[in-house]
Length: 403
Image 1: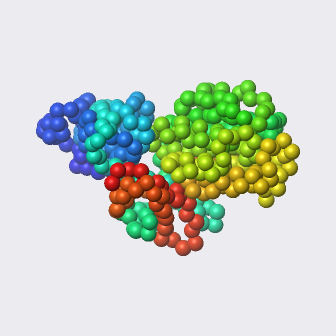
Image 2 (image 1 turned 120 degrees about the horizontal axis):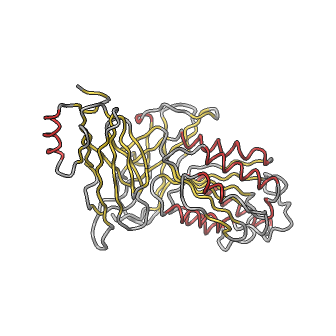
Image 3 (image 1 turned 90 degrees about the vertical axis):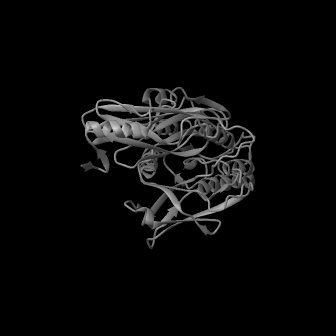
């Protein structure tokens, strides 16, 4: 008998199958689980796929995945596979899967990964894309793998992983608390960020980073609303604005996180104190895997066409417009978008809108058909077999993996 493609056998069969799975498979009240991929003590870094095998007397309710004790995803039907990103820090990790049947019985399996050793060759290079599909400004959902074509430097790629919505994320909420955000705008920014946090699911995490001319506050990455809310308290709206430096710090923090990474910036975009230029920041973003959204509030600061009203800005109008264009290019490059607002009253609804967009994105994974390791920028395009749609995704990557 089968249920949701889960193998259901008697006790004798379970014993034989658990022996076949190996001595490390873990049993609990008629349910066994093992990790088929990756191998225990395998050297890994970056994006990987975890595959669990489950054998049970009763139908399986779900399989939860954990990395270093943190939940990173859940799958409710076979095959029990999940793509995650171990991050770019070369270190060991613990991977655990927990299988639960409909009667509440659990089985667990834990393995360890090792850091890469210098001078050793490894198979790396899985490219992960998160894709927004719109038609007439509405999100297109329900598409299957066959609807998508990925082109890498003009060559069609074979998709090895696919998910339609609901992939957990780790977000950095980067909030401008400088003088230009004083008063109702800052209060609206807090409310908007909290609305985003309130809409997060159990497997999502976030950090709140506040900045002016320097970084003013940073919370840990967490799903705890109280901790994140505390990071939004006590900011008075003072000092200059170092947008580029703050975005750089947020991206560096996200690099050390696992899985899907998102940066949501709320700022008027008038940079007066950064050491990094827009061009410098753009160079760094090319190595980042995060998707960037920018909520640009122009109320009382400047016109949407870039003409400057802020007399306190230390940049010339020409330099200001150049930096704005660089920020817009950064957002477009990563597959995010710029939302320009003329009223602070719109901030909360836009935070919720971005959260809803993240829920509806498709996740596509592929190994480039040609492994170059040439350190060059490689252009990526995603096509959808549906007329009249707008597609947004990360536009490319620097190929820094060994060939």
